[in-house]
Image (tube, rainbow, N blue to C red):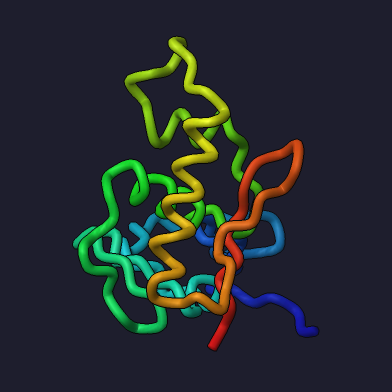
Length: 144
């Protein structure tokens, strides 16, 4: 390891960047992140171009495109691949208009199953969406 000097950037996760400006002060870097995140954490068999709403598995675009609920679920898991996403977060993201009305466990499970099936059409050798019992779901996006 080495001592920090003025101007060094410190990256914490994907959305936090700090610039070291002295031993007494460290300030956030104000810079917009790109829509397609080039971070090594998001390089793998599965890639999403969030600006164009396109999904690629093993460099092959999914065609036909995912349904809106499938895309919303996958994008949420993709951008939060460092953690487990709860069922409540899935409902908030996929069905924002249904908040308070309740979405059944079966509806969530059916959506996850359909998304898994769509991803398996292109890459049947890998299970991208992992169920974490009692907690929710996480994305397993292997590096190639």
